[in-house]
Length: 208
Image (tube, rainbow, N blue to C red):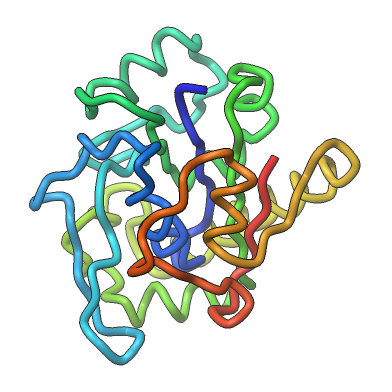
């Protein structure tokens, strides 16, 4: 497989899910730049949380909002321009939440990781992490203000819960730790510095 797609609303803690598989030896980390990092202390200590390319409208590695109007070949040119290494490429976008069927049909050989938390928890965590002062990625162009952000979080979470219901009997797998996620994705475990229990972090993670 060439890609691992990751979908989650802002504030779903999806960046922590990505971070704790990103250092697997199976992953192409050539999208990492210091300019593509963001640290915050919402958990009580300052930690690196955002890293690598984010593919949302209005962000540095932008995607068109209606990706289902575009071909696999065109979209892969957007994904691949951020990488020049080897290994599996993690492609993360909030808007994937509303296009999961399209992704599964277009890249049937590639898994989709769904990250979910309740709407209010997402909005509260996103605000605590820096809201529109988050320096990377930038949220202001597409998400604009808190009212718009709250509305889009609801839409994206609905897309994720709809997908979890739809794929419940079609290979959907719930995982409880990042190591279980690595096993489900068939990638190598990261080193012992990267361990995450999703239940303890109030995150629901599933793989299609």
